[in-house]
Amino acid sequence: MDFSCSCSVSIDEMTAEIYNETFPKARKEHRCCECRETIPVGVKYHKVEGLWDGSFNTYKTCMFCYKMREKYFTHGFIFGELWCCMMDCLS
Image (cartoon, rainbow, N blue to C red; front, side, top):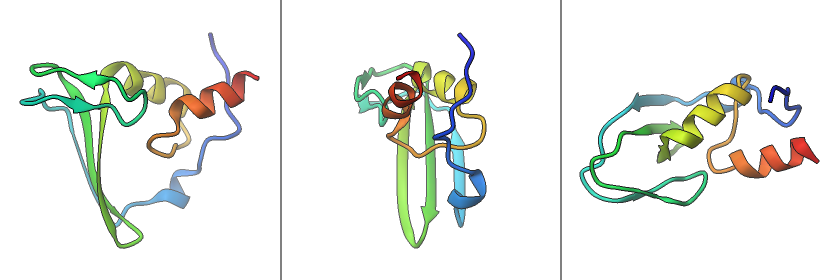
């Protein structure tokens, strides 16, 4: 499946003042910010910490959702909106 999504957010609009991206292994259970499924202990996940508009936030994403985001939202995205945007683009 290959499609382009017009609901992607421009990266320029969402530039973080501070941004740190890592791929740690979970030392405790976490919840994916996209699908809301549990990220189990010992499993690698995508972690982003940053400062946007004066607010510090941390986003943890399971590797499945991370790969979907990387493949289909190459022009930017909003954390937590992956599946809503995917459904909008397919309808």
